[in-house]
Image (cartoon, rainbow, N blue to C red):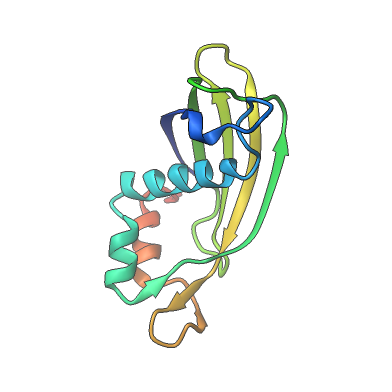
Length: 137
């Protein structure tokens, strides 16, 4: 299992007329968590693209627990539970750092594609190698 936690502060622009974080923003927060998780293990998105791959989202699920509001400091925890799968899945929890309240939890599922063909491919060796040390038995 690989887990990484990132802090983000809610910007005014992230809120809606009800003064809550707009529901669609949480997918952006998930992206921040996922990007920082991969960066933390030496596998930044830039490397994926430089190697000729992209990692589009093919499925997402979110469960809203309690609202976040302007200026809240949030902790985004992203987790990868499987070393090798054709469709990498990342799970998330977003917690209010100051209150400890769970805000939202969910997941995203991805697939590797080749940049030039846009065709789905197996996870590349660079991905498998980057995760391997976290899943050694």
